[in-house]
Image 1: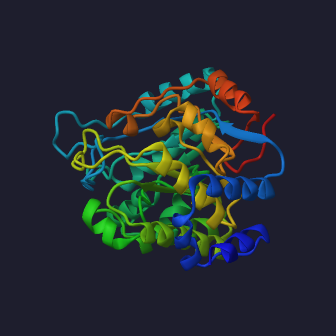
Image 2: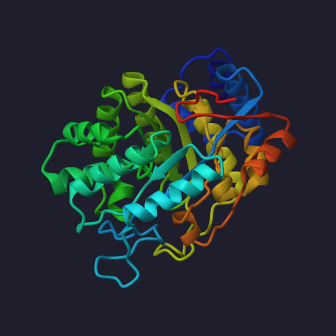
Image 3: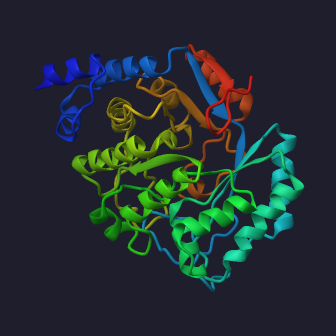
Length: 352
């Protein structure tokens, strides 16, 4: 079986879910070798890309109550907030002054805000900062918007695009297994809804990313289930520009009894993701959760993108993990790992 799987990978043939599951039995360095080979088959040059952007969390008030989140506050909490458009604008101006050209807007599922708030926020940004790419509202937020507006997923997306939405981040996927979701995020959209948002977005011409947060209560087979669902949708739409696997950070969450995933496991899942996802060109490494040195090693395990400068990041930081890199530091780490750093847009068009 192992020899058959290796031959299929070497000959650029698709692995079945059963064969994907068998990858967990491979040695780490075997996986690294195979993932690196696939990476260079899909991305010929020794270029590693990154984007200069900022995460703006417009509200931390959320009714989802995910057990893995250390950032949210319940409605009525004295620590809850909603940023004014002026505060959002100030953050965007700081981003532009630091060479940024994209913002990621993400917030809690706030029951106190009407759908018009989100439309008007996009319109405000586009009117005042038309040069900035708005990468905003992961699928759980979109599903929340359908509930507060009474509109369909498609109609919500059409209105957001009209207001200025440029692309959608792949957050809120966690693990696309409803067994897992019912246990760690019971009030959030299910896996079918997550995939439906992405499918509708792709049909409307929006590019999106896909993520996977692992290292909590999922099984190896559920990781393959997740990867398979992403791969199947990509076959159908071709709308995912990148896949971003990252590790759950237990500190300060209701799952703080779990042991934090070690770099060995991270590199293994990254490599399996690169090998299995034969129709997604880019795999992003996670220096935000792993630190820059493991991220450098991850470039030899299938990664070809260093992610974002993340001028601001609050959600992972709330779980006690704070890695900060300026653009020149990202370029240094890419270069010292033996690669050529290049700025990119969300769709992976090179800027320089």
